[in-house]
Image (cartoon, rainbow, N blue to C red; front, side, top):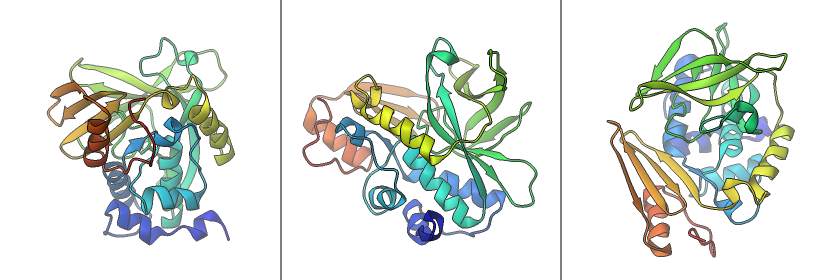
Amino acid sequence: MSDFERFDLDAYLGRIGWHAARRADPATLRGVHLAHALALPFENLDALSGRAPSLDPADLMAKMVHGRRGGYCYEHNILLWLALEALGFRVTALAARVVLGAATPESRPRTHAMLRVEVPGDPQPYLADVGFGAVGSLLVPVPLALGQESEGEGRRHRFAVLPHDGPLELWALQAYDRVARDWVSQYAFTLEPFAVTDFEVFNWHVGTNPRSPFTRRAYLQRTTAERHLVLDGSRLTETRADGTVTERELADEAEARRVVEEGFGIEVPEGLRLLG
């Protein structure tokens, strides 16, 4: 029996609060993607504990569906992948270089995972990604096509082709920054498929390398209809739906644990210090 056949779709949909139709159509794809993005937070607490999180489907279910935890990109998007396959969609994994804040695309390794999703009867594939976490991330899937803008749940996105020396086109997902009034590239990727075995390698590097930002400080994000919340080390940033941003430093470990448990809905593992 495959992982997809063993996947508990009922438990997953209950966890994200999706109680509507279960059809392999654009409306279900959009609804499940949005429900997942709003229900499950982004967090790196396993990596902060010194270990790469397991990508085994049973472990993902125990941690993120049955437990009060989130995950980072591989965990989120493998979980969504399992759900979409169970619903009847065809899914192909993609991998990207995070270029947000980078000097050039080549200055970052491919460490981000996303999904190319095909809807039966629809010639247009979609990009689905519930694991990026940033304020410029997707809340709903977008058509995987150049030359058009997509708007969903207050966020605007488009794809552009970046110059580079490789034989394949280098696409970039760009988000519109309302403050800067400009398009900002989030990550860059080509369209060749990747496998879970590739993600296992990426996951080990991101989750255990002492130079990885995820092994050095707490990094959590949570999106709701009203706000986007980020904890980066001891700095808590809240971005409201109207674009208003507030920041503050957390006072101590006790406050950090309270914010993570109440603001992010995450149960902090026993013995883990959030502030080092």
